[in-house]
Length: 183
Image 1: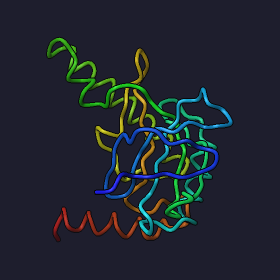
Image 2: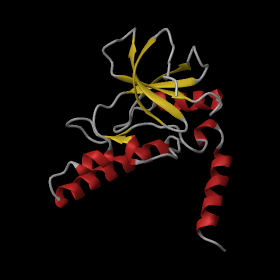
Image 3: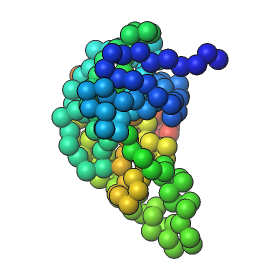
Image 4: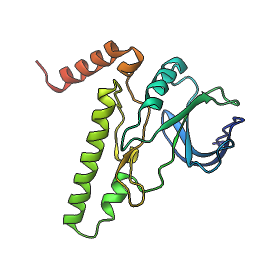
């Protein structure tokens, strides 16, 4: 597999932090503001309609919610043409690692409860703003050193009502319910 390349005049790429079916996440340095800790989430070419992603960025960049990694920029990779989001880098373990670092069962339960409350609060704020996450998992919840849990924004698996596709999302949710609860 060839090495991943990210090309943009404003952002210098650094190490790849992770990759999945939808995107590659890597550390970047903003040449205009080099002291900000940022990541680029570069979506696979053709995985999503850039107009839909642009609408989601417009929503997420305006949200200033506790527990939410902020979205700062939306652009296009110069090499591949793939859309990308620039977000805050959260330096800390993911939810599984953070809970697993607890010294005994009681402490693990307390940490898990803190994570659930923090993630649920952040999701409630996102839902109130019309955004459906669709891909919440332990790897997308990070805990900064000495801080409260942060839910790192990830691209939803299903279209967000914020981008005008709530009918699609509602139909997908209804199909899942019908599958789970047969008539």
